[in-house]
Length: 77
Image (cartoon, rainbow, N blue to C red):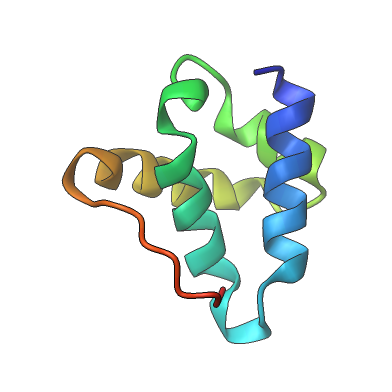
């Protein structure tokens, strides 16, 4: 997956989330895309997504959680 595609997905997830769940949506992005994000610059992806570069830390947190969690659909976030 290209860095631009990852950035677009992150932007969409961020914009679609409610104000209180913005960081949660970033964590979930990191969990969902951990394999594709490996070796990529999370900072660059955040900047391309139009969100603060400091959220790269939150993307990496999601990536680190990925091996320990499984996704389920709730219709929220």
